[in-house]
Amino acid sequence: MKRLVILISGRGSNMEAIVKACKAEGWPAEVAAVISNRPDAAGLAFAAAHGIATAVVDHKAHGSREAFDAELARAIDGFAPDLVVLAGFMRILTPGFTARYARRMLNIHPSLLPAFTGLHTHERALEMGCKVAGVTVHFVTAELDHGAIVMQAVVPVLPGDDAKALAARVLTAEHRIYPQSVRWFAEGALVWDGEVVRHRDGAAQQLMLS
Image 1 (cartoon, helix red, strand yellow):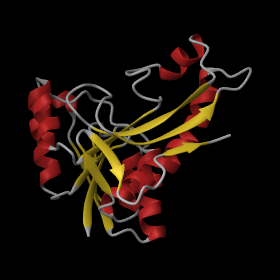
Image 2 (spheres, helix red, strand yellow; image 1 turned 135 degrees about the horizontal axis):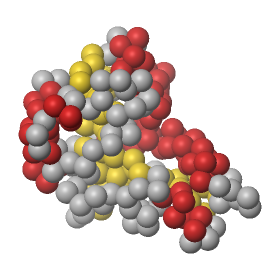
Image 3 (cartoon, rainbow, N blue to C red; image 1 turned 90 degrees about the vertical axis):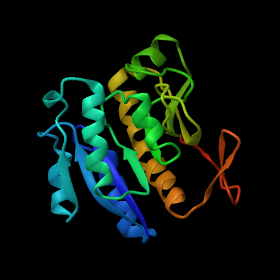
Image 4 (cartoon, rainbow, N blue to C red; image 1 turned 120 degrees about the vertical axis):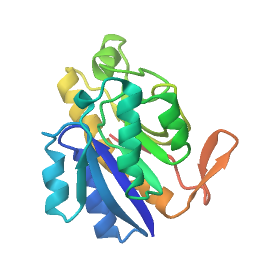
């Protein structure tokens, strides 16, 4: 049984999707804790209502990024996770922290990486006239929004889209591929081929949505 710790900063909709899928699909995993860097994160209430331990490590209470990451690592390690899942966790992590959880920390980013790393992905995709957009689940490294890709979903950019409409379409895709990716990890289905991650049975690692 794999133990999962999920990090959030807000409402945690991807966290909710993972918690619900884990229970409904009977994964060989449990969500051991949900941790937030914001005391007012709405997702904490959802986790507590589902009997999941919660914790807050307030980044404002620490004088440096390194100090915050050290306290966050202590909180995470207290739950002895096999996998750390970033679900809308809005903090840039230090190289020491990412190295500590190398190959056992996942993130989701609302673009088809390596395109549009960082913020304002939907606005930038629209400005560039992209015909498709999407989302990527990847392992976390010290380089922002890089790391081995586990799964991607592609969604169309429709005539008349603004950033809000495109973001909503991408979010629906996020709620499909993030739980799937976490489940694959829990099942031991992800294998490393050098710096590339593949599914051991050749399952498709891309989803095309209309």
